[in-house]
Length: 189
Length: 69
Image: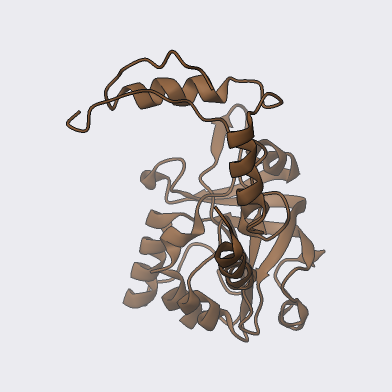
C-alpha cells in the first residue's frame, strides 16, 4: 500500500516487479496537462495542485456530473507520449509516482533515479480503475476538455500497479526487451 | 484454410479483420497455431511486462488483391 502524499523512503525501497496499491489522491494528466504544467513551472507560476510527492496517472477519464461527479471509466493511456515532458517535470519535484501503460523511455528511467517510480496499470481495465475511485475531489483546467483536464481522484486501494521502473535505474520493459530479443534470435520459422 | 478466396482492394482488409475477430478461437488451423506458438515463445507477456502468454489466439484470413490496389 502506498499512501499519499508519498513517503520518499518507501518509494526508494520499491523494486521492479513489486505490486502496490494506492490509497489517497491521484492526479490525472495527459499530453496537454503535461504541456501546461511545464509552462507554469517555466514561468514560475504556482500550480493549482501539488505535484511534489504526488501520484500522476496517465489517464483521460470519462466522468459524468449528476449531483456530483461520477467516474465511469478511468483506464490508463499510453505513457510513451509523455516521454518528452516527464524528465523536465521530474527536475522540479523531489518525489513522484507515475501510473501508466506501456512504459517510458531511458531518459525517464534516468530522471526517476533517486526520486520516483513508474507503475504499470493494466490497459483496458478502465471500469476496474473507476471502482477504486471513491470521489472526485477537484478538477483543474477543464478548458482542456474532459480527458485532458487534471482530475483529482480520491482512491482506495487503486491497483494492482506493478513497479515497472524503480528509482535505481531498473526498467522491467528493458529487461523484457532483452529476453525477447534473445528468444527472437532462437526462433525457427 | 478456405479455398474460395475472394478478391478485394485495401479496404477489404478491415472486413477480413472483423471476420477473423469473430471466429471461434478454439478452431485455429495448424498454420495459425504455429504463429501463436512462435509469438508466445518470445516472452513479451501481458502488457509487455514479461511472461508466457502474449497472445491468446491467431486467426488469419486470406484474400487476393492486385499490387497496384
